[in-house]
Length: 291
Image (cartoon, rainbow, N blue to C red; front, side, top):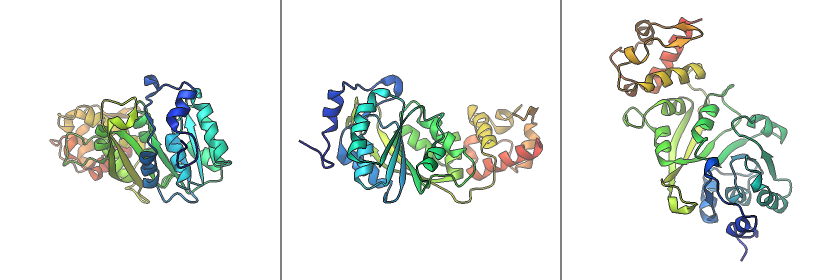
């Protein structure tokens, strides 16, 4: 029986090309088009929008994005085994699916979007678990800002999703990822996806997260902010005067007392007690002290 998009059921496609999910690539396939349709709609409205999808696999979400009206989808996939399934979708939606085989961590996604006509553009993806956080950090640190995308709709493990949206009120989850995300975007968890929805089922629940870029985030050097939060949360139980002791930037080791005083942050605070605005002040202070 054909699916609503008149393509064969995805399970049959995967069986026909003998495509098994690879743990080394962080693959977990979604076959339920009702669920992939919900994810696609959560990134909408999609008309006149270019969607960049990372790790499409056999194309479950890809099909949903195109069926829900995306002007075009640029699908970046590492696994060449997925080519037959993706090419079948491309033939069904002529001119609307552009397949790029390569590593998303080293691919200039903004250039791909420009190559295919430009924005408005969004990223919507069931991210491979093993590179999801690295990709998000890369996108959040990108310059110039606002970026080439106007929304991120991404699936992560639930624990990662909670770390993205956390505030100092949720100290266990609040960390570097929350600071970077909160600095440059408005974040929220849209809904959960049970492990049973995937093939093979992972050991954890997943969540779909929305990140909408802030047009004017607090002025700050993103790479300095990232480095500072890495140092501060690397020893999260220690006071900042200890966790930032010897923090180095541009080949210079900074004095923690001077840094914290310039940022107007108490030396006895721990990283989990400092909000996004406080970390931005720290990054700006470190920038000024090393110029």
